Length: 346
Image 1 (cartoon, rainbow, N blue to C red):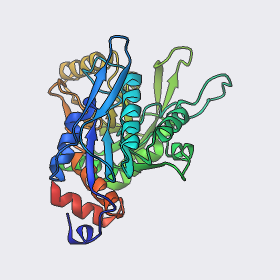
Image 2: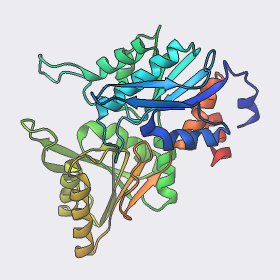
Image 3: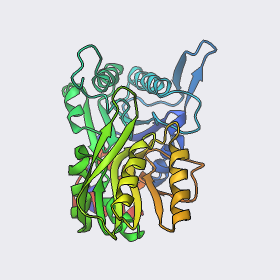
C-alpha cells in the first residue's frame, strides 16, 4: 500500500473469515493483503440446518466475513448461503470481534427493493438488511448494488452499507482488452444512467433499448426496441447483471436487426441462472455462423469455474483488498489514493 495509506493507524487488527462458497475470493484478497484466513468451518446437519464455528480468537479484531450468495457449482441455495452468512456474523459478534463487515459483492434480493405497485408482497432487500444488522454486522460491503437506495434500509446507528463501484476500473480494462467497441448501449431505459457512465469513461457514443417484459411470467422478456443508431457499429451492451440471459438475447436481436456489426455484453454480476449459458451459447453459435462477433464479459463478483472460452472475466479481488485496507485504516474508499493503492497491487 502507499505511504499515505499505511501511515494511518489501523482501528483494530484486520482479519478475514470466509464462508465456504466464497473461499477462492477470500483467499485471493488475503494473499493481496499478505495475511492468512481466520480458521472457521460450516457444519450442515441432515435436517438441513447449519451453523458456523470460528476456530481462532477474533476478540477485538476488525473482521471481514466473505460470502458468495450466488455460487455456481455449489449445491446449496441462495437462501442457504445467506443464512450461513448470518450464522458466521453472529458467531463473530458472540466472539467479541470489535468490527464486523459482511463482504457480499452481490447483494441478495437487490432487485426486490420495492413493491412495484403490488401491495401484498415483501421487500426482500430490506428484510435482508435487517437480518444482517440484527445478527451483528456493523457494515455490509457490496459491489455495484442494483439500487443504492438500499443503503437507506439499514439503521446507520447500527450498520451501514458500503457500496463499492468498479465501473471506472472495469471500463478501463474493457478498453485495454479491446472489448469496448465504439458504441455503448443500455439494455433498458432503467440502465441508461449506468450506460452513460461507461460511455463517458470511454468517450463513446450512447444508445438505449426499451425492454418489453411479460410480467405474468418471471424472467421473461418479449423483445427490445432500439433508441439510436447502430448501423455498422461495434456495440457494447452494459448492465449490472445477467441472470437468465433473456434480456441479452432480446437486446442483441434488436441491435443486429438495426445493423450492428458486432456485440459485446459486459456486466458486473454474471449470475447466469437456469438457461443462461445455453441461450448465450446459441447466440455465440449464431454469430459464428453469420460471420460476426459476440462476446460476454463479467467480473469475479460471481465466479464461474467452467465458463466457455468466449467468456472473459475481470478480477475484482485487488480492488476489494485495497478497500478493506482503507476501511481498516479509516481511509477513503474512493478517489485518487484508492486508485494508486490498487495499481501497487496489480
